[in-house]
Amino acid sequence: MRIFSAAAVLAGIQASLYWGGTMGIPIEASIPPEDFRKLPSQLGDWTGEQVSMDPRLFGADNAHAVVHRIYKNGTGQGVLLYSAEFANVPVSNAPHPPDVCYPANGFRITSSHDMQIPSSSRGSFLARALTVEHEMETRHILFWFQVPGATYVDGYGQREVFWSYRGRKTHPAVVKVTLETPQNGEQATRSLKSFAPLVHAWVTQYQAGKRGEGKGGRRKAAQDFRT
Image (cartoon, rainbow, N blue to C red):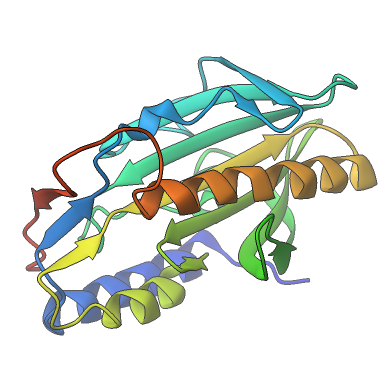
C-alpha cells in the first residue's frame, strides 16, 4: 500500500512539466476527428445517464471535452464516470490526478496502489486505485491518463510518455478517466475492474481514429508549452 501526499504528487507533476517544457516536445496537439463526447451511454451491460458532479472534484479545468455520467449494470451496481480530453498537456495547468484533487477538498487517502487491469482486447493497462474517506463517507476510485498505446497515473509517467514525442510535429491529446463508486470492499473492486476495460477499449479506438464518421484527419490544437 502506498499513500502519497498532495504535495508529493504535485512535485512530481511540476517536475514533469519542467522537463517537458525544455526537451523539444511538440507544441501542437493532435485531436481525433470524432467528438469525444460521443462516448457511448451503453458499454457492455452498463447503461449510463448524464449527471451533475461536484465541480471541486471534477472541474473541467481546460479540457477540450468532458463526459459526466453514472453507469449501472443489470444488478443495479453503479459507477460514476468522469472523463475529459485535454489538448494542453504538458503545460503548467495540466490536469491534476484524483490523489491531488480529493485531498485538496477534505478527503483523506486511506489506501493507494497501482494495478494492471486486463484489457478487453489484449494485454493490460496501468491504473491507480484509491480509497478515500471524508467524515463518515468512503469512496473507491480507479483512474488513469490515456494516450495511444499507453496509460500513466502520475507526473513521472507523464514525463516518460511525453519524452517519447520529442522531435514530432504533434503530440496526442490526453484522456483522463476517473471512476468512482461508494460500494464496499470487494464489490467496489469487482465493479471498477469490470467497467474500466470497457472505457479503456472505447478510448483506445477513439484515439486510433476508428470511431464514428469523422473526416479530414486529425485536428490540431495549438498550445504554448514554454514555462
